[in-house]
Length: 373
Image 1 (tube, rainbow, N blue to C red):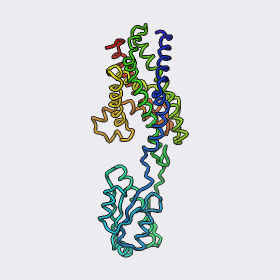
Image 2: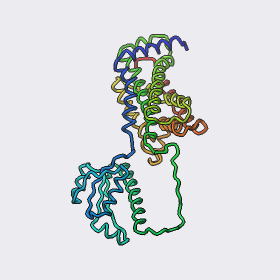
Image 3: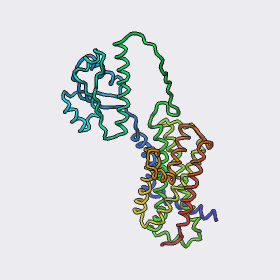
């Protein structure tokens, strides 16, 4: 292999990439914009639950229940309809997230020491959000019950009980950004590297310069190296930028080794660059290559565990996830970012990602031929 030939091809690729204003925008602005947008948008933290309260009791006890909901700053009573039909209409229009119906005999039942039913109606069109809202509602009602019980029966009662001292490791405040932002780092790197590599060969064919590359003394593997090295450098630079953004802007802790993180990124790029090269060899136009790229991106995203737990997927689909390099990269990123673990824990992910990446890249090289057809 002649290093000089590869070096000149790499230089030519950089010149061709940076000469186009649109490419410069994709290379430098797109990762930052995607990181900022996804970092703020992909968030399961609930900070504002709109509530419609139908209070048929209108007593001190019912107002106390309403105050118990609004005291935490998460529930906000935005509507107080007089009729239940109006509550149903608000839920149907999406103007509230949940409704609370308090019966007329609510206070009387509590004063008599009996169970007072309260109906909670939650918009279940988004099941994950509905489950979280119900969980918050149960916590509020439990605190209200304990306080009411203490007011009705103020005597001291001693009995054996469990004192649960709960502590959440690696994400003490259970902030969803700490879970999602490392995954967004992987997704941004995959999107850019896969998209740019998939059009690398096609761009030469459409520009009419592929014939010039064919008649050069470049060997096929030298041509592939010259085409992939620029995207490896660009992807690692983008990785540095998005990691800095995650740590200093979103304040995500980086507890582990950054060297191991970059090693994992290089192994991950074997897969994305290999798939990009394969797409580039089987596509006829840049538009076709980009459409094929998005065909790969969606399954990678859905089967990676980025949003949906793999354990909840059907068994045949779980088998397919073993072929997804993004799955292993996400485990490594979250392990290094949040837990600070090293190769002693993450070595299975490194080994499996190396195997998948090696097979994909080898297959792409085998598929590539230094000819026009």
